[in-house]
Amino acid sequence: MKKLRVKIKRKESARDLPVPDYATSGSSGVDLYADVEEDVFLPPGGIRLISCGIYIALPRGYEAQIRPRSGLALRHGISLVNSPGTIDSDYRGLVNLIAIKFGKDEYVIKRGQRRAQMTIHEVIRAEFDETGELDETVRSHGGFGHTGI
Image (tube, rainbow, N blue to C red; front, side):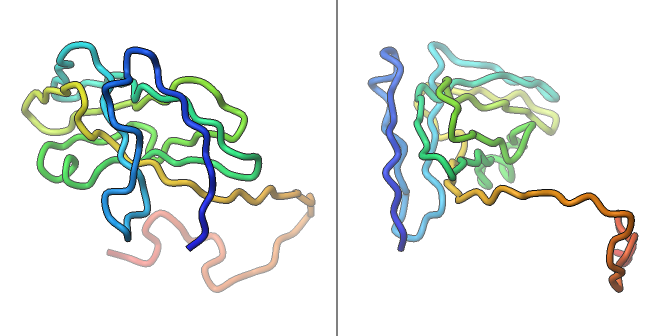
């Protein structure tokens, strides 16, 4: 399995939180933790910015994707508004989550809880060639459910 060294810096106030790590030997993403000073109440339909308490330095040619945790989505209707969120290799700011609450009940985000996963991916940069026509395919212009349910 390919490995990549990624530098990480913790906010001074987040030193008590775990460093992101893989939960199992087969995990694709590392867990990210809630760096909140006090409980954050997320009402139905509510959106909140949640700090993860970390900064990362990805090497050029890589990106990080931030994804919701499936158990939180299933059991509590918690997701991320911009899923997956993208962290570019030249971003050095605080890693945050844009959490949203689906469903009818309020949800409480507590300090240190695992809130999302972060995966690292190689990036391919495209060069675009403008043309007057594109090749035809069987699908062609079909989209948005064109093959049925």
